[in-house]
Image 1 (cartoon, one colour):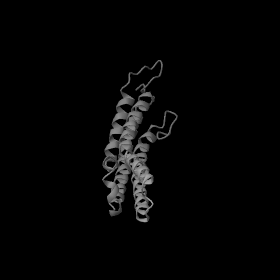
Image 2 (tube, rainbow, N blue to C red):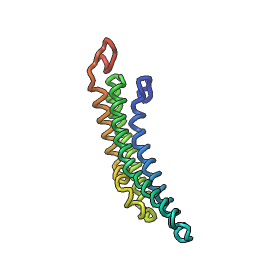
Image 3 (tube, rainbow, N blue to C red):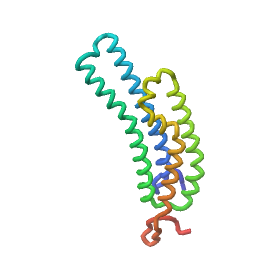
Image 4 (cartoon, helix red, strand yellow):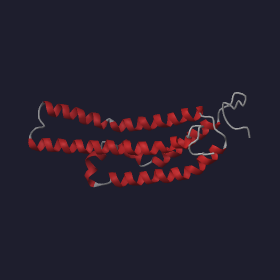
Length: 174
């Protein structure tokens, strides 16, 4: 029996996706705003960034800064999604033990992403965009806590439902 990716739902994959997705989302938002700021600086020095171009560019910059709030909304959505999918999955109790053991592995992965993100953002070239992405930096430097919350939410909702063995709606018979 393959506990990591079975016909019962492959629930471990759901836990690993959360820190990886948030990490990539945070990097892409910060790097995107950095590239846009560099383009605006280049346009400003050449004299092209005036009038309508400046008005449109400033509105685009504000919309890129909304990406910070979107990251937090996506994090909350992913945690709610793990709860909903975990509640609907029917798994034996051995999965709880496997998830707890693999939680160590997930913590290591999350801490690696935390460290890499902190090193990436601490570079002095990102001083301009660090002010605009406070929430994203907070989320991506605490991915290990987000992963722990996902494990807790997923485990509680997976094994808290009422077991009905006649209809096989959850849990194991042991």
